[in-house]
Length: 177
Image (cartoon, rainbow, N blue to C red; front, side, top):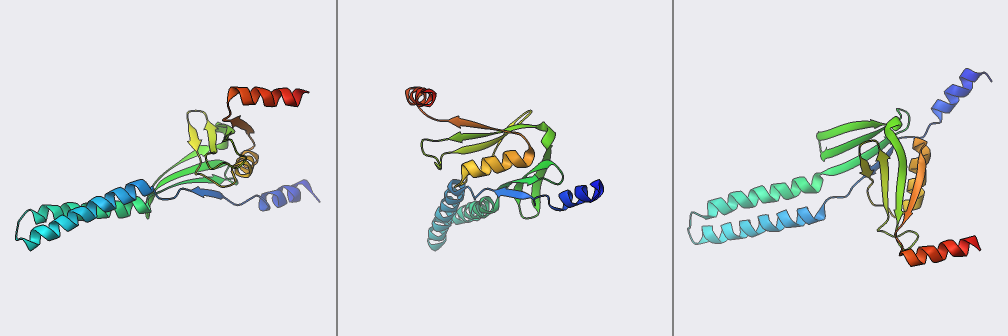
């Protein structure tokens, strides 16, 4: 095999794009839907009594329900594009997206903050860049995901533990003996 064939086979076997997407912001969805339904209920009562204030409540109710639907559809997405050696950050919905790119050369590491349990849902993964820290969406397998990200980008993995100082010093002493 020649060097060119090895290089081409290595490019062909590069991993596909890794996409992390957030779930809807349920707090805003429920809040705006509740506010919209409340206004629509008040508009119905006002129309039933023949009051003109119902038009304002109907307009506000419709606007709040539309905002609730839009906030349900909004997403934040992180895509690790290993072939292009960059990270794509997208936010928006449908055809309306704002996106920007961060090359792997600007990434310094991946920080994994672990809770008290090994796969605690409070664990956080952050990609450390030159001017910002990008927080990844929550996952049920934080250790594996952080290791995968660090290996794909060729950077170091930093583990941070959220323990009390006394417990941590006991653990360090037990490791030394």
